[in-house]
Image 1: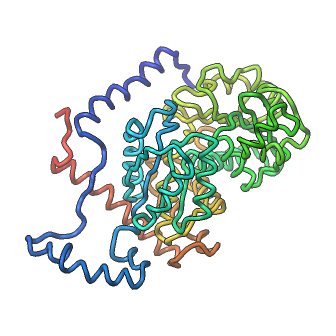
Image 2: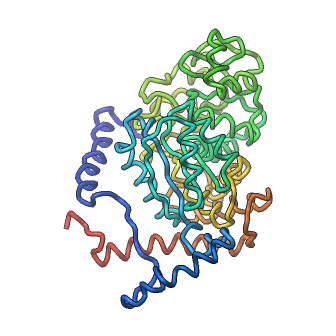
Image 3: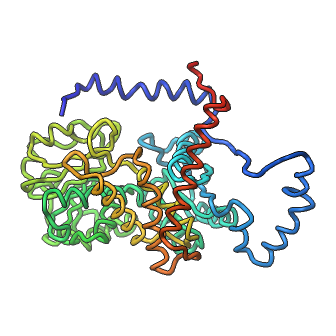
Length: 449
């Protein structure tokens, strides 16, 4: 693996920002509304609007489930944020978060064929936020929560999952966790270790870190073999701030109770020592994680350093320190742990079976299918997880998620798996073909030509 200087990496990292400033202004946003019905002449307005549409309205009034048949509710997902934790920028507000939510909509459409609509709310109160999301349910088939600060993001997600009749997902929690588990499945396969036996350390106890810990336990990691580290050290039952954790950070306190069977105390180096697996969703590096610490890990160690734009430790440094497999959040290093591998296919699957929720088991089904796609291509130390350009990831993931939803009784539609694959593949192909056609016909113009 070629070493890259900090100067070279920063120069490369700055280029997308320069291009983004120019092209966002040129296109004035990334997504819009297109029509999907024919308009032969103005007489067709009588079909699509008044008076013809009244017949459709009356039909839905008699059976509101018909909204899925007569409107785009079946494929609509709301991408909702309050702008309180946007990327690594913090609380920059809903207007400043809108470009990110539009970008999420772009990925949903191109990768999963999902019509995702950005909604940035000027509301920071979690209970009022919850009320707004619940009130939006008639329009949407699902909700993607995005870039909401913790700890309120946990309360918002858990409440909405319980009280909504459509699937609600928080990508910073479930999405990150799902893709991380997929990578871990194959990494363990390569080093020949069982998930129930390995010692796992997770550095970072924000939304992503807590969700990863939760889903890894569902996937089979033994809770007592797990250590979680936040800014004050290893989570354990005797922490000096236990009263604060119990009152304000209940999810962290739950990890204190469930994990760390031996009640190990200390900081990051103490938590890493002897670990088989290190997952870091912490402060960008380099230098957040250090080579001497990696050297203390177990033989054939697995290191996921997922901070962006710079991982907590350079991949080659982790390898030099003894790590067998290294993953990051970047596309220019092997084994990119990328949320975009998850949410488009997962929501495609949930929408196709008209699911009422996305369960943890549905997330695990997605993780397993992601791992299988990579296995079918031939996994290696530098290829433990698929990449976004392997198109079959998304319909296969959709089928796995939908099948688990049917099995668990949270799906309103029961369609055979082979039919669902054809449906998902066709929807995704149509979305991509439309973009390519619009580019060919210069409806989407290349500003550099």
